[in-house]
Length: 262
Image (cartoon, rainbow, N blue to C red):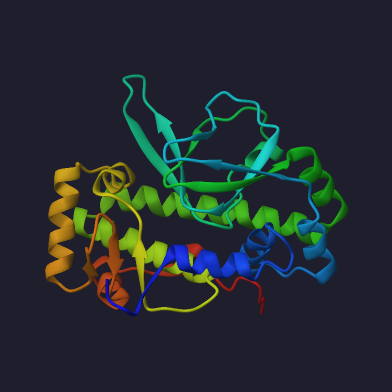
């Protein structure tokens, strides 16, 4: 791996060392990327009761049909939301990164309509929904931040529908990598133009609605173009600008820097 490539794990290690507000500080950092929160609001979020749970790849944090009692906050690793067809085929419909609240909809909807599983070894903070609900009722700025987080997740889902339904295979992969680059940048404790994506070909296939063989061909094509590297089973983004050009990527749907209002 080139020396200037930053693994996501290193960013997370640095984050853990800087957790002045405890484990939930990564959630606070995520919310601050799109919503203003006072110091008191941040301290109230940090004080939410929670317990830590660790899962191996494939471990289940929520199953379709469950009535959730906690909202999992992803502290480390990757997780995903999936839907499973009657024949057992699955489609990954959302990819979750550290700082993401994985099931805010259970504040308002009583039964899960999807599964959530760990994609890599993952660590979660499980926050009781009743405590989160009380906090949002007591602090309007926190309630607004939660609402905006839900709306941005919906915006990402719409872009994924477009990506899978209308973009060609090469553009799909390039677009997904651009999205991951920008989403990681929002929570990273340092900036880097290059970073490692810990996703296998099989996982990318389930994300993009392609076969692993097709994904492998697209990876090789992006490698030849110098946009990515593949030093191991994971991918390394080497040239974000190349990927953005290939996929006509625009980060507008991520609603970054949403705080200012004209």
